Image 1 (cartoon, rainbow, N blue to C red):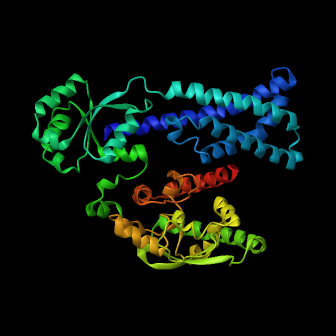
Image 2: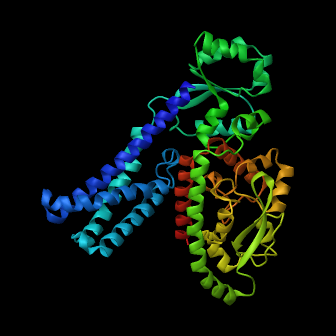
Length: 464
């Protein structure tokens, strides 16, 4: 897997470059602000107080950038939404700075005018850095030519994703259907690879027709060392951060879905869940009286609801939430969009969903050990059974403890106005993310999910 190592290293280089460049922009913007403010190169006695105070802020700002997704690989590949994200994030950072300086006058500097100047300078420089310089520094000078041996929708998906974006380090110049390759002239195929100057073979080794070709592929990649070999499924995971569902067989689950056992990860995760559950419980206690009043003003109905949902191993559990729809259907097999005609989301419920406050009463389930903060999102019992009948291996997602938020929730994009899958096809995509989480789950991945969940909550509320 030499190429995947190179690809990962290249991505790490790009993200390290982003991190270092952002810090440099923050520091230089402060220096330039002081130079303009005092109309001279800032001497040490002017620079030092600001450097100490802003130094902590710069680290907080980088964390906010991370939560906003500005260090994800997608930001290197898709730039259409980048200007808006940069603008909103940096304004938010300036607001954080203003709150800090105005609430802590003992800092001893007068930042009001400086913050206004800094906002303009930092926005200009961060836009220049991110939109003009970063693309030039991270774009590969030469794309490695590759052949893609495989067939099916996920092969087409990878082909379109890679070939339509010049920021990837490879380009598929040849695509071969394994069934046709098995019965065709293999020598002519190799000759075509030479004509296209291909150096990389991306192979779907699980394809039935590929198995008969493996001795020839081995001869080309290992014995003769004419090409590098890359497993299609490993590359798919690297690009999309999810598992291709066509890979799934019981042997895959035996290799990647380990039974829950007590270890450092599970113990630490449980401690984090308890702390998070207690904080959610505190918020629930504080907001409940206010919700009781506003819900009564909107109409009749209970404040809390209990839903029958699926827990770890497919067991039944009672999940507690703030009511967001007119009527509680505790074991419904319908999608939310199917329910809306007869059971619409209330105005208060819409606010609860956008802020994710409707989930907070589930602190009880977390403290009881039925739920985790991070994990595959569990289904209402009726819908879960419906999906299990329609999607192969669907119930395997319950091999680990379900979570309030998860890898799918921070990565998948749904139709406008929806915050969860509303079709079998969307659910299949969610399942691919769930299996990626189950395979790679760790404290580091849970931390990424937590930070990006906060980011999604913030930007969902700020879109009102």
